[in-house]
Image (cartoon, rainbow, N blue to C red):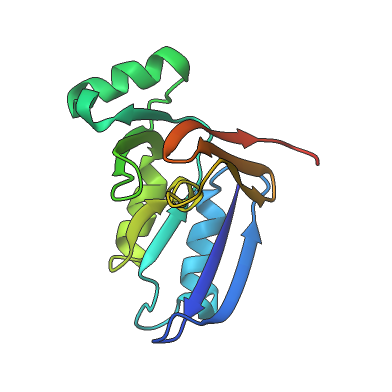
Length: 168
């Protein structure tokens, strides 16, 4: 229900961070307005990654993953709208897992048109990347209207959940 854009210098130091919150989830009309009118998106795009967080997702161990069956599995747990397509993102090298989640066709088209150099990724990758910890470890990423929780004990992955919420 929002978009955060961060610009980095060549050494990976953040130069600018700008957050946009939407009145409704993935407001593509507002995003189109931003892409066409906000100076941050003007000119050659330094934006190289798009990080998404979606509460409707499934994690599939790579050993069990079959791309043509992922939509059926996701549909058993979450409603998929007719104007959505599935994204399949590998969480390797941190976890041997595929994350599958829906994205609106119009949103994906906006990314392809206005940010063609950027690759789509998931914030869950960040939440699950700390594999060198000992003992129980809970990673929390708290965003406006969404929280990501990832729990592991040593190298053993126990839980990952993305929760949407209205009020804290």
